[in-house]
Length: 196
Figure 1: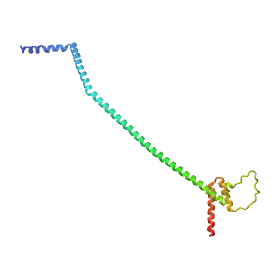
Figure 2: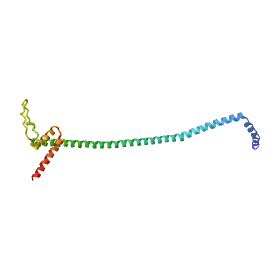
Figure 3: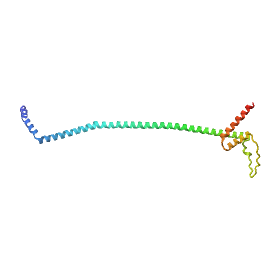
Figure 4: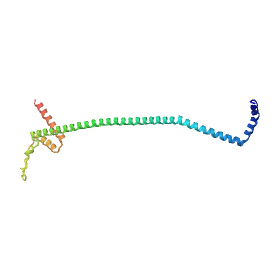
């Protein structure tokens, strides 16, 4: 009996299968059912693979990219801060040097002013001693007094030169007055050499 059943199946199965495959409605229905089952299983498999493999990979990639961008941005900001600090230090050094030069210039101007005042004082003394410039206290302050009539007096060359120097000093032409005094000193020293 066991041998008879497979033989029966062998006889009846091929024509039955042929009949089934020739029925297009049945084949379409079977294909749709199989496709739905395969589609369902494939979706489940893809979702599982996506969640297990792709999502962690994307997360780690985004974290690494974020860290890299943060490092690059942080490095750029640190470099800009370092350059700004370096520029600030250079500017501070230049300002300090400039302030030192200004202080030196102020000291030089002060010394020059003191030397000029001292020179003018000495020049006035020389002129007063030579009789070219009257001293401040010797001028007459009498109001309404008539000056005595002018008597033409012959002046020496030294008196004329002293008056010229006095006039230059009154006009605040100190440079020309200094040149005149220097010339006078030179002439007097050359007189002494001629005498000797």
